[in-house]
Image 1 (tube, rainbow, N blue to C red):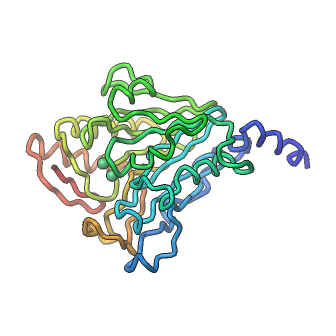
Image 2 (image 1 turned 45 degrees about the vertical axis):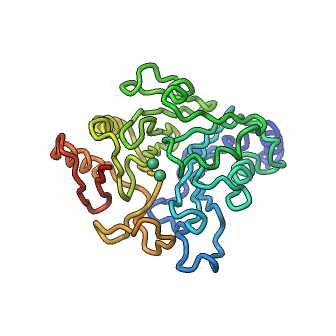
Amino acid sequence: MKTFKILPVLIAIGLYSTSCSVSKNIRASLNKTKWIHGAANCKQNKDEAIQVVQLNTNTWILRQNKCINYEAPFMFLFAGEKKALLMDTGATEDSSLFPLYETVAKLLTPTAKAGSRALELIVAHTHAHGDHIAGDIQFKNKPNTKVVGLNVEDVTSVFNIKNWPVENGSIDLGNRLLEIIPIPGHQQASIAVYDTETNILLTGDSFYPGRLYIRDWPAFVVSTQRLLDFATNHKVSYLLGNHIEMTTTPGKDYVTGTTYQPDEHALPLKITELAELNNALKKLGDKPAKETHDSFIIYPK
Ligand SMILES: [Zn+2]
Ligand SMILES: [Zn+2]
């Protein structure tokens, strides 16, 4: 019964999200999660604009509805004792269609009105492409909120990366450390994010079940080796990218731009699949080529 006496206090000082002793346990099995996946007729789609899956007491995965934007990117929210970190802001600016700020504020302040939360919110990005930054505008000029810029310099500054891209950085949210691994290649400011609490490793658009668009081939090859080295030297619960474009049929992807994906591949990929990508890149050497694998497609641009 003591819990009932201390709980309001914890909520009041903004520690609600980290107060539970089971916070380190991941609740959701992401290999079985049913994500919203658009509709054959979007006019009749009744799904929420943003699906929220709670991974543990202070970690959430959000997915944008494909009927709002076909990219349907994932976004990730981590709360510590002092700060919260939102990785990515989705593909749509308009808060009436895509109420991301409101959704995040409610998650961080479950019992108070949005805007009165105690945690400082840092909004950063897995990389600077439009489908991951469009919602930034909703967070600008909001109280206790900082939106990180899109250049490499902005990223190295906020995550304290001394020597991009060969050294990692980190951010402490208050009794919760996240490590940041530079992985340029898909985009020049691409990073991976490792949460030491849940052990999830975010891989952005650099590694996900879909078309891995590679703009800087030599950088991508080096970054993939760096990411694999990190993943094999750390405990990883899930490798999580930013999109799903593959179907459950090995090697088969959805058509670009589709708003309906009823038979999606699971979001998490395996370290063995990251090793498969790394090996394939090594074999291709300095000759970029499209190559279809069961759960991803190497796609030089
Ligand atoms: Zn991208
Ligand atoms: Zn993307």
